[in-house]
Amino acid sequence: MTMPTRSLGNTGPRVSALGLGCMGMSALYGEADRGESIATVHAALDAGVTLLDTGDFYAMGHNEMLIGEALRAAPAGLREQARISVKFGALRDPNGGWSGYDGRPAAVKNFAAYSLQRLGVDHIDVYRIARLDPDVPIEETVGAIAELVEKGYVRHIGLSEVGAGTIRRAAATAPVSDLQIEYSLISRSIEDEILPTVRELGIGVTAYGVLSRGLISGHYTADRQLAPGDFRSFSPRFQGDNLRHNLGLVEALRKIADGKGVSVAQAAIAWVLSRGEDIVPLVGARTRERLGEALGALDVTLEADELAAIEEAVPAGAAAGERYAAAQLADVER
Figure 1 (spheres, helix red, strand yellow):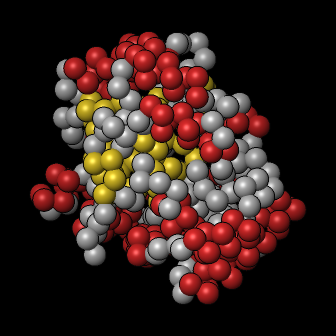
Figure 2 (cartoon, rainbow, N blue to C red):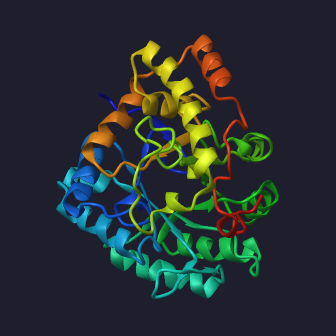
Figure 3 (tube, rainbow, N blue to C red):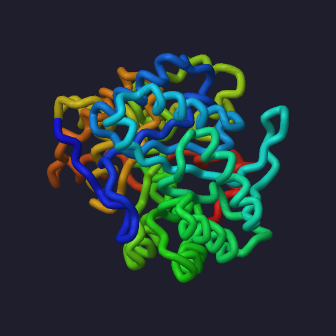
């Protein structure tokens, strides 16, 4: 298969139509197999996936070191095709707790220095603060990244989980390649204001959570036992009646996927791919098996009647429960 590509906005790099979200290889979904994680990164690169997404706070630097190790062990041709997207700014404590966000210019440069060292690279392809720091104007944070671009340490400026007003202010400060934000069949709030705004400004979208943390993958079951600390153990959409309702939506989607001869996950990813050439879905595969399934979505073309059937089965706003618990939702600019 020849990997199709898409541009991250008018100013960003051209990358694979699917990116690999690497967070789950280190944090928030229970223990992962290190060897399998590295093999999955290599399999992704071998398949033509060029966009690798991480955050410096994923297991306090573990994920960046894991990606760095994977890149060092990859064949030279594959290693050089990787485009690395890094989120920064989330503050952690020794117990793994969360302590807010830091977007001060001095902090931005400090975070970047550590990320470059952990990744073992001389530049970061896309750099973005993970959440808006309410105490620092976005112009100051983006301006600091722009200085890193001027010095060659960063190639492109990104944003993450911010609203339309902040997007406009950031784009007026420096060229912004893309907005990273959750977007899936059951998380569609960006369609009202944010998506029209980024399209007006020529900013791309890297969509995470396209399978809603496995909820709409077709593999999640109501009796699943979660490891301690698994994000889903306190996520509202995975609790009680909410979970039963949401799995009902998955079964409705499964009927359409079965009729198409594809998996539920492939149908869900293909739906996100269908929303526009300016959207690059990130798939959070932790194993080669799940990666292979996700890549199969690239071969799925959803016709108009199939898209209509999906919209009827899983209409906008159909999910039960918020995508984050109240504490995390407070950090997301709406």
